[in-house]
Length: 62
Image (cartoon, rainbow, N blue to C red):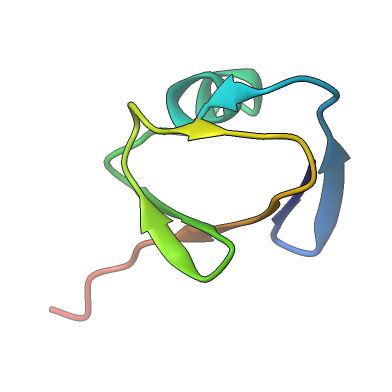
């Protein structure tokens, strides 16, 4: 699967949980939103081969 984050692309061969993707990229789940094939995925969801993943940093406008 292809994972995009801040203009960089990463490749993962096997199915993997959102939690593991964030861990491998050293990203905090509370500061990022993971969108898989145009749907928001929670940490426990599994991302399968061939899916397109985009990770966005969440910022507060307070």
